[in-house]
Image (cartoon, rainbow, N blue to C red; front, side):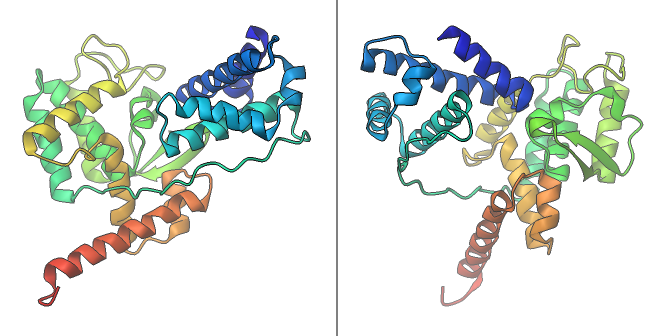
Length: 295
């Protein structure tokens, strides 16, 4: 069992180039499935046992997981991970038992108003324990909103992006690179941070540093945003990732087309980007309800 899990982990990390979080989540599901099947069949779970798995066995596994309190959305993710593992273990041509996942309602991202973005960044910069840390956090938040980066993409930047220009090459999920615009305000914020940072910048080291000089942890930015959100009375959905949602929503509202937005966000499929059309419609409806005298 351990050998199969190790092989699967290597496949995800090296061959599929999945993120660390995805590797951990998928291997954890694979381990849970094998342990369940071991008790279910009463023998060591290996590829031979996996080949015997039926739709009924998978339903029993999911029912067991639902007993742990999984929501419909989490159960759907678990089923997706199970299918991925079975395809790996049995081969792409193997017949994977067909089973329908629970119905899930896709939630729309909740964008943050531009004024609130800047006010939140201001609050975080002003409350930082050191001025250079405030400059760092200000630059990171502007980068998320101004260029639509994921928090892991921003904290993963290294000194080899210097000197800065009008664009930035970013490495996203599965090692896929894309070019994003770098607004003058964002470029100025990064350069102000670099001028204030007490740690030297090197091409092979992280651009954004922690207090002791190591790579900046995304958790520190999330914690800073959480504090600002509480102080400002913003909605719980105001997170670092919401800044990326805001980037996309505000571009779409300004006339950007979906294909361009897909490239800027680094989405593998257009369906991932199309969710923002719903966000834009919701914003227009809110504006209508607030402004129309008969609303």
